Each structure stands twice: as C-alpha cells, then as structure tokens.
Image 1: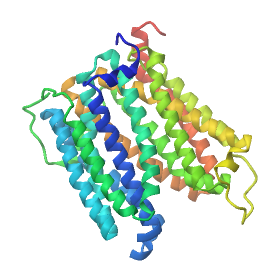
Image 2: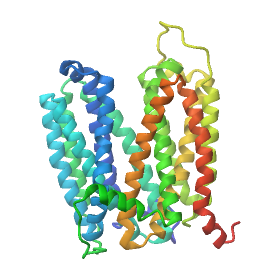
Image 3: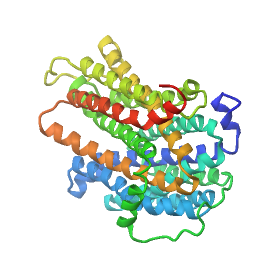
Length: 436
C-alpha cells in the first residue's frame, strides 16, 4: 500500500461500504442481545417461570448454534454467487428478523425472542464468509493488514457500544419502543451501506450445493487441515476467541465478587478490553508496514499471557467482607491497585489486537480465491467450538473450586502453549524471508 496511512481506506469505495455494513451489523447483534438479556434478567424470566441465569446461558448457546449448522452452506453460497449481492440479501434478512425482534419486545415473549436470536445468529453465520472473502478481492495484498485491522477495530467498538446502549435503553421508560425502532432502523442502514459494496465475480459458479449439513461441516474442516499454515492460523484465531470469551464472560462476576465493584465497573472492563483490541488491531499496520507476516504473532501471544499473569497477581486481595457496599467507578479508580487491573486488561487486549489481525491476513493471502469462503466458514466453525469449550471449561473450573483470577492464570499458561503451536504456522514464511 503506497499510502501507509490505513485510514486512507475509508476514502475508498473498495472498503468503506463493507466496513459500515460490518460495523452496523455487529452493533445491531450486540444491541439486540444486550437488550434481550437485560429484559430476560429483570422482567421475563421470573414471569415465565425460568431461572434467569440458566436462560441467559441458553441464549448464548442459541446464538452460537447456527455457526455449527450453517457455516458450510454459507461458504458454498459465497463461492457460487456474486458476494456483494449476497451481502445485500443477508442485510434484507436482518431487517425482517429485527422486525420479529420488535414484535418479541412488544409482546414480551421470551420464546419469540429466542427464535429471533437464533435467526440473528444464522444471518451472522452467512455474513461471516462474505465479509472476509470480499476483502482480498477488493484490497491489494499490502492493504490486507490495514483492512483487517480496521475491521477488527470496528467490530470491537461496535460490540462495546451495542452492548452498553442495548442494556441502557431497554429498561428505561419507553425503552421497548426505542429499542424496537432502532434495531429495525440500524438493520435498514446496514442494507443501505451494503448497496455500495463493489461487485465481485462469482468464484465457482458451477459449484453444486449440498443439503447434508453435518457431512458438509465435517468436509469443510477436513479439507483445510492439509494446508498446515492456514489451518494453524485458523486455530490461532479460534484460540483468541476462546481467550476473549473467557475474559468477557467473567467480567461481571469478577467485578462483583473479586473487586467488590458494581456493574458500571464491569462495563468499564468491557470498554478497556474493547478499546485495547481496537488500538492493537490498528497498530498492526504500522508494525508490519503492510507486510503480510505472522512473525510477531507468537510474541503477541506471550504478551497476552504475561499480562494475564500480572492480572492474576493484581487480583490477589483479601476476601470481601459480607455487606460491604459495592464500589462505583470513581471509588474504583481511586486505588492504584485497581488502576493496575485496568492496565493489565488493556495489555491483554492490545496484545490480542496485534495477535489476531496478521492471522486473518495470512489466511486471506495464502488461500486460493476458489477456496476462500470455505476457509472462512471453517474459521467460523472452529471459533464457535472454541467459545463453547471456553464456557464448558470455565464452568468445570468454577465447579472444581477455582477462583476467577485462577481461571485467568490457567488461561495465561495455556496461551503460552498456544504461542508455541502458532510458531509452527509462521516458521516457513520466516525462513523464506531470511528472518530466522
């Protein structure tokens, strides 16, 4: 990329409409999910006779399930048909699904909202292979690091803002109507942005679609395994999502039970984590100067691990005295020890941004165009599996008596092992460039 300023991509139709479509879609996903979880927790669960903790966990599984079921089909469609047109269809589907969400909020029907959540996960499943396979069609190879960095930055900022505003709006007076209007309006804005994504040519127009979901899912993974550098990059990306899911899921209970703070501090943790990943993602382009290389990925994993160990140490404090009032944000920030917690969270997330962007670029630059969407679909499948492993593993550790800081420490140790594993994915490239 002749112009090393990655923000120059925002002036290009090759990138900006796709970025806006992705940003609005991710915002809407998290805006809806956050509003739904808050409504379930404070209104619907008890009224419907459910345990809100169980129902929230079920909601997480409902959203992830479509990634297992439909990723293979999504990859096939992205290879067979023109991708910008498919993005528009996915965005039209989002408008319809969000109209269902508005109805679910109005009726306060938890079952309808669960159906909508599944459908929202399904449309995200079909969008995933499209957005990442379009990037290498529209961007030059030396623009991939910058493009992926901006996409990751936008994704985590949309997760942060969507989560915050969804939770804030739904329980206020008239919140149901406001959220209902916004989810449909944001979906419509995403469709409008998608109309300006430049056309691409179909990659495999003669591809025959299959209806055997399980067979196709297994095949799409086994087809990638022989390509060692690509498959290890996929596993590296999935490990990032396992680590991210582990931290994000524990922030509320970590804030309350370990720090003794309220939900505003938990939101502050989410904000620091999201901003850190965004800044780390953008820093990749300056660090690599547009070169598609994974040479810094293992060291980024080591930095994530080291910051996690420091977080464990910063979290060692006397047990909370029962009945102690929870700290607000100002009281939390008044302590240097708590500032160290924020610094550790920022370090973990900034290193995470440096870690994940080159892995996406490696996949995009080394994968044949005819196989690109299938490889991205494989990434979606393994990401979902690793997030489920995070939930199961964390639950088992908690049931075994591990504290939340100890879970962070276990994650740090395992990430060191992941760094060694990832090193194998970049060794050949480093040798070819004389970097070893």
